[in-house]
Length: 114
Image (cartoon, rainbow, N blue to C red; front, side, top):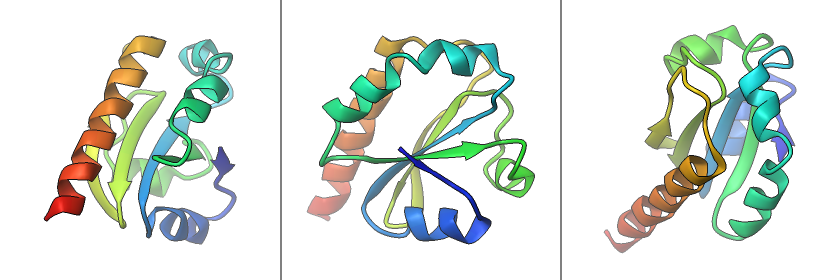
């Protein structure tokens, strides 16, 4: 997972292909809950989705731009345009994240056909 270090890195990272941005914070217990299984989830979607991590405390302008209220939150982009999001204040399970990522793949495939 690419960790965003500068605001310009985010815009560049989402500009091409299918990208999922994960908004998180070090102090967030729900973010730490998903940490152990996210590398396996990433690997399962390798070649389909690129992942970027955005620390919500370092980039409040992105949090505001994308209306992120709960973390961890996931926002998908296709060639720089938002397509699907999984944003809530509730803890997310691996199954819910995988269902969201399946939906991201489905939307990306539909957009590619257009």
